[in-house]
Image (cartoon, rainbow, N blue to C red):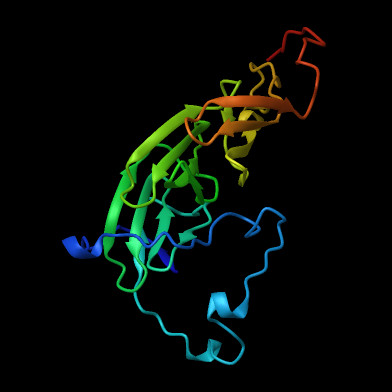
Length: 224
């Protein structure tokens, strides 16, 4: 699956071709919960013997995106990608036609991760605004959303792990960008991992990487 930065131009798929095969999906960073990063030759269908025969089949341009920050999700017939403005696209793997799109409105920075829970196939999406969303894989509709940050400058950037009905999502921050501002009392953010119920998006627990909350150490006035 290849993407090109530019203006998104994709014809919608025909009505009968918008279904999504959810029997299997390749998603997430590290491929599996053990982070093996291994894809068998049978599953990948690409090997040293046939790689020289690869040819461009189609291309899809991403609007307003200089550096995509996502890992795509692939099913047997569909590829899911996203762009900087926060649009998630479900594209036909063989023609590039658009099956569905979902407008999140905030940059997606995590891998697009497929989970199966409660009889549903969901796509988990994490954003720059620290919102975790569950989209229905078949049509891109929002199933639930949850704000999982505990700081005004928290964001989701690290890719998650799913196990036994629970979604484990690391929480990071863009507060580091404010460190150079002499009028900003940096820094108060603590990294964390949240365990989220994949059925309804409710937070089960949160574990911080630093146990103590930030406290004022020095008070000073900055001279010009």
